[in-house]
Amino acid sequence: MIIFLVGFMGSGKSTVGQSLAGRLGYSFVDMDARLEGEQGMTINEIFEKLGEKAFRDMENNLLKEMVSLQDTVISTGGGLPCTGNNMDLINRKGVSIYLRMDPAALLNRLSRGKSRRPLIRHLSRQELETFIYEMLREREPVYLRAHHTINGLNFKMDELLEVL
Ligand code: S3P
Image (cartoon, rainbow, N blue to C red; front, top):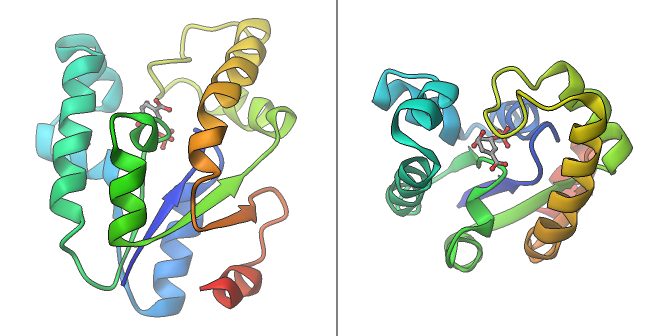
């Protein structure tokens, strides 16, 4: 089985994914970290040097490789499910989990974690708040197509294990 964690930037996909993989005895792949390793650049550098379109193409190609894995938990970048037919592919090939977090919690977490995220690193707190509200409105309908939605803020591993 492949388990895909989807959700907005800052919702805790990598942390949850890593401990979920540990609990299940599965492998863990963080797609952003994998792309950084393959390219020898940070996500910020990929956006700066090659542009967002090139990054999205890389993400799409990596997803196509990932879907043939077995017994793996995959943490996806926040934009991946919302590009092309990726959410369909994710749902067809694996079990998907949306780690849901409300905008206020995301604002708190992302104010601290924005420097390594190219889409938000230059935003003031006010701009970040607007960005989160608007982007979440656009993206959440896609995230909500996941097989399961889990509360990211008050996350309990046992609840997640129960729905799988
Ligand atoms: C992005 C989310 C990031 C990373 C890139 C773009 C997005 O991943 O893929 O900065 O479009 O939401 P995280 O969700 O792990 O922060």
